[in-house]
Structure formats: structure tokens, C-alpha cells
Image (cartoon, rainbow, N blue to C red; front, side):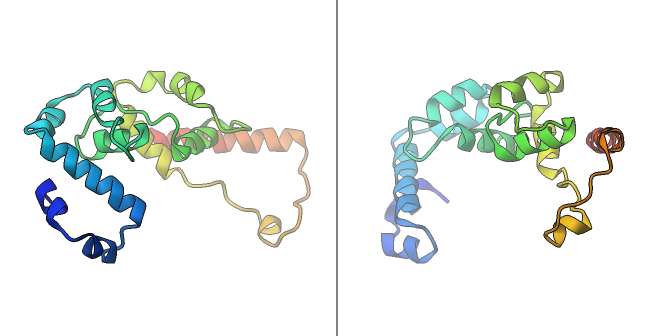
Length: 168
């Protein structure tokens, strides 16, 4: 889809395709930005600098860092992108490392330092970690009886090992 096609399309047709008013506004802004900068798409696609992509694209209305990270990972195929603020990545790390709380974006950076230069792959795996299994009591809305701290620690260690094995 070329920017000129978006700019020429009647707004009501784009709205009928399912775009909200706000998304239509963002899409038109993107189309205008790309139409006004000849060769910009090719120059952006040729870069391997995530920082450059972020600095070029986030000034556009409706484009944030997360959007640029997704573009870099899935459209440009950059191997070392870590969306440290992404809830799915943070939740995956919480499950993988048995953390009691979601890690902060800074903690995500620290926990994944060894993943360089393939943090995109690590992020992909974090999105695919299955949630912990629900107990029968929890699914019926009752509190499960506590097996005691020693058994709980052993279960947590076992789950942690299984998650690490799944990522490897």
C-alpha cells in the first residue's frame, strides 16, 4: 500500500474498513510523512540502528517506541530488539525467573543482557511462555490449601527449570 493510495482514498472508505477516527488520523499522518520524504522508506529499511529508527519515527503522531520496536523486529528483521516495556515480555520474564512482581523496564534490560545480540528472539519466546497452570481449586473460585513452604519452593524450582528448558 503506497502512501499516495492512502491519501487518495476517501476517509469514509477507510473508516468503513474498520479504522477508528484516531487511527485514520495516524494513518493519514504516516502517509503524508512518507509521501513528503522521497526515499525515506528505503533509507529507514536500510538502517540497522534501532536508535536511529526511534529518533526518525517517534516524532510522527501515533508512533511510539513500542511501535518502532515491532516494526524493527517483524518488518525489518533486526535481531537485537528488546521491547523492555512490553507487558508480554515482562510477564514472560516474571514467569521464567519466578519473580513475585513484573520486572521494571530497567530490570528487563538487566535480566536480558546475556541475550545480546538476539534479544528479538528472546522476546519472541517470552511472548510464548504459557501461563502457569490453574489449580482445580482456583478454577472453581476456592482457595487452594497450602502444601507448605518447602513443597512450594520445590514446585517453584521445578517450574523455573521447565521454563528455562523451554526457552533454550
